[in-house]
Amino acid sequence: MRLLLAVIVAVGMVAPAFALDSGIKTLKVERGLTPDAQKCVECHADKQPGIVADWAASRHGHVGVSCIDCHSVDKSSPMAAQNCPGVKGTELYVTVMVTPATCGRCHANEVGQFGRSGHHRGSLQYNVKEGLNFKGMSDLIEKHEAQGIEKYKRAPEMAGCMQCHGSKITLGADKRPTKEGWPAAGIGTIWPDGTVGNCVACHTRHRFNIAEARKPAACASCHLGPDHPDIEIYENSKHGHIYNAEGASWNFNSAPDAWEPGDYRAPTCAVCHMSGIGGLTTTHNISERLKWNLWLPESKIRNSPDPLNPLTGDGAEGRKKMMAVCANCHSSLHTENFFQQADLNVELYNEGYFQPAEAMRKELADKKLLKANPWDDEFQRTYYYLWHHEGRRMRQGAVMNGPDYAHWHGVFELQQDIYKLKSIYNKRLKTGTIEE
Image (cartoon, rainbow, N blue to C red; front, side):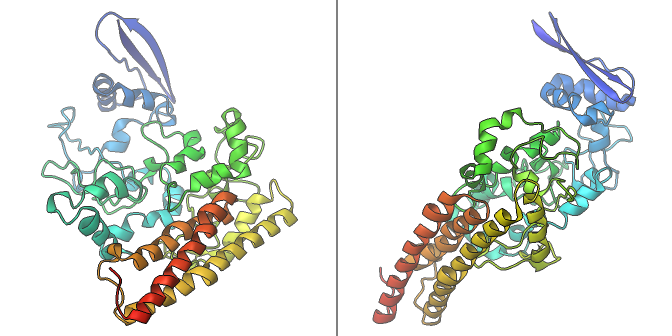
């Protein structure tokens, strides 16, 4: 017996109904969709039923937003094609890619806010020559990780970097995206139409569920690991402890700007960084409530309106907004003392660890006592771990209340790094040579 999927499309509502059938999987569409839209749904229900099932259960499906509304493009678009049998020979042009330009037709505020955030920079910083670290990342990926083998020079990026940061999508002769950039769910994807961003990084297609995006798992697929273990830090915190104990019973479906304490007992990532709470409105600018940049080699207070600048945001205002989030559950004394503790840890990292390490690195560089290959140089590798791994963990653990990451995975390992750097530095200055 195979499953018969019947989706009845009424005006303003889609009601799925299921029944068993002895033969072919079919889909029935009634009212509310154009004939072209009906064809799309019926065809894909047979070929990719999971897609149609997600769409039928989505808000888009409920209000009659169809495949055509999101996937059709103007004939002049660089992505325009008729490689789908259902539109071949018609006046319709479609693309598998749905860019922020399409989402922005209905969600203009959200797309605009995203464009002012650090997420906007995700792929641009390493995928274009004007990016923040184009050469450094290109060298790491192509020369070192791919070992300079031409055939594999993009392999580390395709399986790794672009799945979180985003890709620069290129098209083949058939107007379909090539493997060098697709598939990718990276947040800062650069599309052939020139737009940047990827809503499905958090609101996965074709359900686009707001509840899914509000849960920590939406952020955890990228914000984890040795360099930015944010989900681990969250779970180490009291907020994460409460979520793990009872989060399955919380209400994640309230409307934007109506999702407030009471729906949940402790914040998720979205509550602190994005959601409407108290006097704050919902924002898709994840940099808006931040004081420091915590991932650069040296932390500085945010002071730039440019999303391509690592210091994008207004640090003083960002701290006020984050404290306004905390005020919904905590006293002012609790919140003020917490952030003073966190700031001292950030400043300790800057003054006690990064600045001395950078001074030693510069002097060794001036005296030609660093290897050309930084990944084959004990000093440069340790220097990198000091800021990119242990240093980030120390700072982010302190600011997000993850004590094990602020201390044992953070400053405890940093003090070992700095002593190691000093030992190598002193030995090279004394001998005038680089040890083998």
